[in-house]
Image (tube, rainbow, N blue to C red):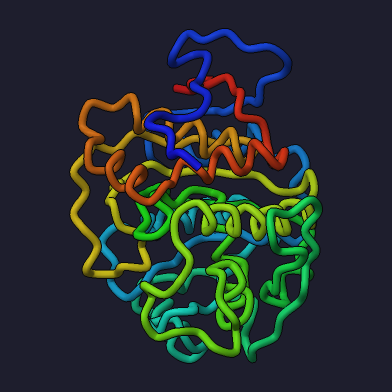
Length: 313
């Protein structure tokens, strides 16, 4: 498949393009702080209830770009009966085992609320995928089924394999169990994961596998899942790069929130493409075929690529 050189469908508000049919609402603010994070959340939280999982990428030790702890703490305190959720990693870093993962959580300051490592003790649950590209089910951290709702709170930035890491990447990889589900999402045999990551699946096939995994989580929660992307310290590297992450070369943009996963990621990608200082991010996205994340979700009906950007002061 040819990798497009610009986002597949632009925002009506940003590009002036007309569209037919419905458009998802994406709420946006340029101000990145606790008050505005909560303000945007209150616009999309109608169907969030019960026990709430807040899926956050908590990062490798001392990562310079992870979301501010105080902002996340204020948000968790605002959402009743909520806590952070994570899963262990496929690569052998600071979060490969539950023991190491818990130590990393302490180092990074995620100590103000419980953090549920959903695949602790290697426990998994298979969630089905309707209308998949390849994966008919994905092994998720078993504890995901203990929650009624999920808030996907994402640091929107680049990613070494995905091109960018938005809401889709956060749940596609982040909710998959570390040593089984993540192998599936990377196109690997869980029983025979190669040491060399260059032997893993890349580009369009990887984006399609991520789409399958994200679909499993979205389909499980139905209307009870929302998406918040924080475009702050937008490095070309993910927070899984830890202290080796590249210093951001573009300015912070703001926070976007939606009940629609595709619209949320599409809006943020559009804003990056419209920024004057986003050369490095665009290069990272395009060299990894990252825009296939968006077209894959559109192809499978995992959200609406047409959206209205509604700016909030």
